[in-house]
Image 1 (cartoon, rainbow, N blue to C red):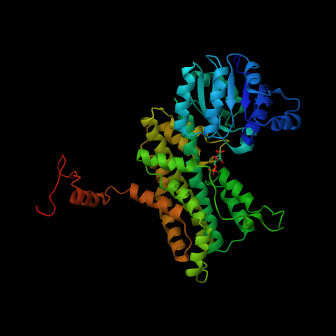
Image 2 (cartoon, rainbow, N blue to C red; image 1 turned 120 degrees about the vertical axis):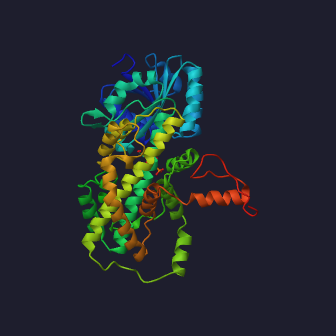
Image 3 (cartoon, rainbow, N blue to C red; image 1 turned 180 degrees about the horizontal axis):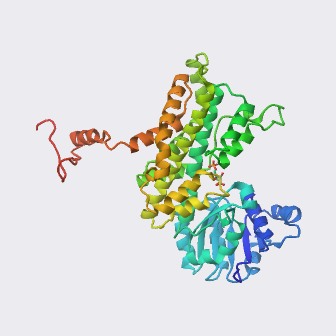
Length: 472
Ligand code: 6PG
């Protein structure tokens, strides 16, 4: 460990900050903490810090002057303007060579802007994506650092000891310049939105179309989690179905309003994918469904207008349930595929020079989208770092060859049962479009040229063409 590596300042004692401090301190690194609300600091010091090497500072100057030079300061505060305000307050106190780390879910463009500002003072900056919620932060998150490589090297010993480990390897690596870390975290969250939507649809189908009870759902998701579907989100879903409700004595899941919230990272992924021209339709759809879920009054009214008796599946249930599991797996591959396609493009456009095998590797542990499937993705990118698309990988491509047929069958049944599976369906449409060597965009070009003289290319000769459609 470097001389500064075993001491760090942490600002912000919210859920993530608190847990990271405990994680760092448990590895013998001394931490000085500061929180804007002194009562929170006091409470943390009394109830959690205990005999760990943690000191509290009562103001920023005390925090900064108490740290060994060059200093390392980790900001664990809510993303947004609060980060800018904090940087403005910190910069006059810092000296060239000091390092600022933003461990929040900051928008990647903000991270680029902040890095420029901080480096004008001769200080170093790291944008650090942290995934795994409070539990992950406490016992091993997946860490996605980007920015100054010198800064990474300085912080590396701490990051490596606190990160989750898979096969003995820490789930952290230097991702690339500028906002690479926060960008990768944003796409992680986009994939997270997609996977959560797919799992929620499987629940919808099983509950409404097949009438499964919460206990049956828990059993099924537990079994699925022992197959190639294995992953953190599936694992917690199985547990969610069994959670008792302390208020009503019933099962908690049935008492939760069906209106999904969000902090915006999934939306950023969709917006940025649109900007880069990379289709991520399952992620877009997940984002859209969270918005649609908010229209509860409209949904209730419209349901009243179109009320009809519930349709329950009458065929062979076990077979359909098995097929649903495989359909879910296929759609998950397609969702990761969209995320990685976006990362590939962003890596070129923003010059991150991402190693996609490494991204998949550090997502295998600690983070919300960790899943057995990531092993296959690691292997795919290790064999071909410039793989055009996950579907071009022979192993994953082979799996999709049979899975898409099953996905199709499940969707047909869901349509007959009037259970909406928009994420599963969108994933299939993405696949069907991507594997169409011909798409009807020739007609769109003809229409554009017809009404706007926007020109078109031809299949049989190079060049740009325009037709006077009404005259020629
Ligand atoms: C993680 C999570 C975490 C958080 C997100 C998603 O990787 O630990 O993604 O960052 O849960 O903010 O939250 P929303 O669903 O509220 O956007």
